[in-house]
Each structure stands twice: as C-alpha cells, then as structure tokens.
Length: 294
Image (cartoon, rainbow, N blue to C red):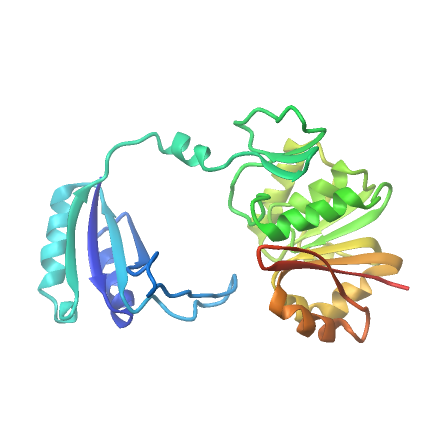
C-alpha cells in the first residue's frame, strides 16, 4: 500500500477528493494540517447532518493506493490541473504491512463503568473485579462505552433499581444502554433507532450478552415506561421533548445524555412544559440530565 499526501486549502478539498476517487484511490481522508498546534481548528457537526465545512483552512489529504505506480500517476495528473495552484505535494510513501486487526483491537481496552461493572471487548479477559459485564466490540453503531455520555447513562442504570421495570432506550445505537438495563434486571426493554443498522447491531449485541429485549424502528415504542433513556444530542433531544415525556409513566424517570454543560439551560427550557430536568452527572464537559414524573 502507498499513501499520496497533499496540502490544500479548504475550498479545494471536495474537488481533490472527487479527483482521487476517480483515480481509483482505495480511501481518501482529510486532516487538519495544523492539528496539535495553536492554529488547530475544531469542526463540529451532528450525526446525519452535513459538516459545517468540507475541511480545514490548511487541509492535509491522504489517499491510499494499492501500488506505487498508481500513487505516482495520480500525483502527476493532479499537479497538472488548474485547481492545484496554491496546493502542495507532500510526497508518496509506503505503508508498512501490519496486523491491522491486532492493532485495532489494541486500541480498545475494557472500560470501567463502576468498580464492579465493566464493558469488555470479546478479545479481552474480564477484569477480576468485574461482577457485571457487557461484552461489546466496536461496530457500525454508536455506543461502545468509551464516551462519557454512555458511561454516565450506564452509571445511572447501575445505581438505580430497574428490576422488573419496563424500559425504553430511544436512539439505541449499539444497544448498550438497553443491554445494561437487562443486566440489572429490567423485565421488558424496547430499544429503538431510526437507523436499521443500529437495530441490527442491537439485536446481535443483545444475543451475544444473553439479554432479552425488543429492537426496532421508533414506532416500536408504545405506551408508558418506568425508565426512558435517550443518549442522542441536544438538538434532537429538544425536538423529541414532547414524545419522550409522553412515554414516561407517573413516578418514572427520564434520563437524557449527549448534552454539553453549556446546553443545560436550553434543555431545561425545552422540557419545562412537561418535566423539570436537573443535572445528575458530569464528565469531560458532558452532562447527564434526569427528571422524575410526578
């Protein structure tokens, strides 16, 4: 494998990406050329929405080719184009062969939720102190236990009595929260997502963990639940406020995550007509907000 590396401004990222795709690049990635420097820029976007920009003001493009001749030919062709003006060829380099599976696996270690509750990839031994575990590998859907929002939701489940409850995991991703509820004794669990890949992922992960739950598209969620979990992002959480609150039965809990600390007040205002949200946990700039229906 060989990498072709280019430096270009933001307004040329899309045309370079399209050209490299036409030149049979196996993959094309875009990085901030100023990463790890004071000039680094943060680009934020929400899942399912277009990114705010195609790239950074100084974008480094890395294209992967099977053969050096392909990378060299692509380099020559790109440099001859009008749009190359103001851009720079950083070079062509060989990518050393590695055990990519082992390398990828090494990046995912067991994740501690509480001292005795752990998320453990299938290729790892279960930590000796673990009394409760979820076996989960990185996959197509969001939620492997490494993100603070997921950990806070799981900590909430572990510290509250959900035994025998009817639980809804709205926006289930990998199904990790639904599986966590099952591990802690929830009786009936509905896990829903707008993404069919997430539904499939949830079903497979539930089977691997011997967790009994129902997974499906959002219309699967019917009636009221004693606990409603939603680890999404602030914008969809605001839109979903009336729907999620309607699913919480009297005396039941609403548990929301995917919220930044600075977004707490706007979430409280969005949910105020139905429930009074409070901050229940915080980690690395993210918060967990909960409410209990009277």
